[in-house]
Length: 419
Image (cartoon, rainbow, N blue to C red; front, side, top):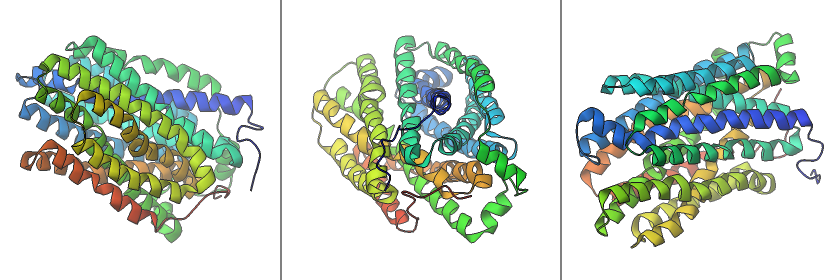
């Protein structure tokens, strides 16, 4: 066992890579969350209905499903290109994708405009994560890899905060928020000037191995089983994220309305509860996931968080009787339910060899999006049959499925990356 401090021997360039990759993920998360936090005003305007109208909620869930599908397509495409042509150029391309198409949302006036633009934004979002996660895993030494991967993914919390603050600031002027989404394009200049391809990528390229080949990924039984199981694990996390974690905003809003709070105030307070308070817990949880993985192992840490997530879903759905009680529970809820997402950035790149790392990690995370998309449609359907707390609690049972999937995956603690 390596007893060195995790940051011992980490070079200035390695810190720079972590910073640049993290900024890409911050804006990645910002673009993904911006729609969730502005969709009420956006869809009520486009549909010509009142905020909270069932028709707006229905289309909100449909567009989230489209976003997951776009993330899958873009993740598979750009993940493979990240192995074929390199991490750096694909990071530039994916950041431009999500920035430009987010900015174009300013001009959306029809439902199909929103659907198409969210699909393209998602393509960039899905592709950027896989390439950046692979880059961080390859650049950092083994004793620091877990912590660096956890920090990388945890910085996405900053993107959620930025999206929440932007949405609260612009209120119903949702178009302005999407103009802010153009700004991440400036990051591409820094990526181009500061990031170089890791030695492991050059070595794999020189070896003549099929870089970024899906035929290779699925032709070898070892990589195929890891890809499919990783995809299933990610589907649980992504399905519960959009179907459970994001739904606490509506859950809080319903609670406030039942307490006699005016709709405008309830809307603003629920955004604060979800976008700031819950995400504080999520950030601490994601920062904690790396050290827990280093101590307990990847699989045990995942299993513990999945079990606690199931229990916290029940608590948030049925215990709060006041806004203050909800604010107490939401950070704990965010800690356990969203910490597992940092684990994907740590675990998935460790499952695949150099010439398939971006492809394999991307397949796990982004094909998981596609598998999670029907869960959103199921969530929308369940909400028409029962109360919102019951619907969220039923979707929370997916965390138990995640515990079952983990039993078939390998432990990668203290192992070298496959070559």
